[in-house]
Image (cartoon, rainbow, N blue to C red; front, side, top):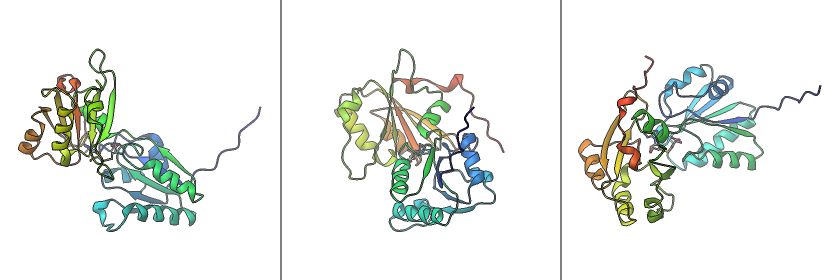
Amino acid sequence: MSSKPCPSLPAVALIGAGPGDPELITLKAVRALAQADVVLIDDLVNPAVLEHCPNARVVRVGKRGGCRSTPQAFIHRLMLRYARQGKRVARLKGGDPCIFGRGQEEADWLASHGVSSQIINGITAGLAGATQCGISLTLRGVSRGVTLVTAHTQDDSSLNWPALAQSGTTLVVYMGVAKLSDIRAGLLAGGMRDDMPVAMIENATLPTQREYRSTLAEMQHTAAQVALQSPAVLVIGEVAAQDAQAVLPLAHSA
Ligand code: SAH
């Protein structure tokens, strides 16, 4: 019987902490946190998950956390510095590291500097938020696919609205709160019907979760009326007409 040598653990774990509810984190993430010497934590991560790394040094690196200039370059350098000191680094991100989370970018950058990393998945906010509002993103006979898009691009280039409007899939829009007018105009011009159901889900899976139902034509008006706040995801499509009656809200531990 041959036994494989145990592969050495990567220096950096790029970890998805899930959408907000601290219980929606994977066992793999919990194990990596327990082994970490240093944890670099983003804004949208619920600090409650830090209970899994009571002895680690915690560095807040979110944009709201006080990094003024070029936060991404700063984070890169910090990860590299700790890894080169022989420390086990956990880089903790909201949702999944590879859904609008720069996980691959960071892994590639570390690799180009000779540092190994692994990506540990988390539950992305759009999926969890929709489910907790009684919306199944795919639904037999209603929606045969999902498109995740961000309304926020680095170069402010426009999305391919006609393709999105006509894809027949459920659209889940991240980082859209400040872009509602563009999203609405783009999808209407792209041929989506103006009464397409829309759900807007704020603080998904947290005790502060709020959800609002509207239509494509009305969504900006609805958002203004309720003062929709970030972080929020938009679910646009026939499935957003489903209601939450069949789904009990998540129980939150104290
Ligand atoms: N990697 C994350 C997304 C980061 S981009 C993930 O997989 O979920 C940041 C955007 O994610 C926010 O602008 C918002 O659109 C969405 N988001 C993150 N957490 C959220 C939450 N708890 N509720 C609603 N939207 C959330």
